[in-house]
Amino acid sequence: MESSSLNPTQLHLLRMFSYAKDEASLNELKEAMSAYFARRVEEGMDELWEKGLWDQEKNENLLDEHLRTPYYE
Image (cartoon, rainbow, N blue to C red; front, top):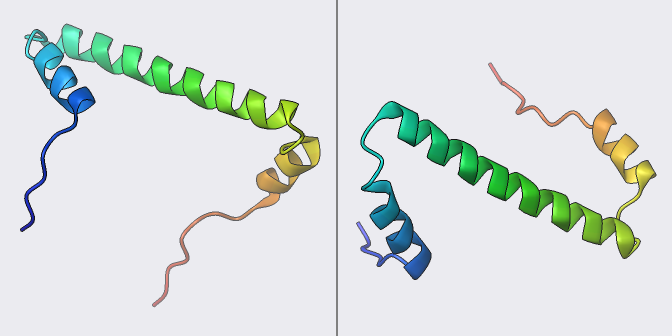
């Protein structure tokens, strides 16, 4: 098994998580991190749209995609 070191962000998060002593704190942290990453995705999509790299047609095409993993017998 290969050993890897943690980056500064991972280390900081581990230190922060040490203060979450109960389920409520854990849930608050999960919500905060989910909101952060959702906002980043939203900003990224806005940027693609503004640059003309994404449009309504691509949205519609994505809705028609079948993205499930096929199961074989």
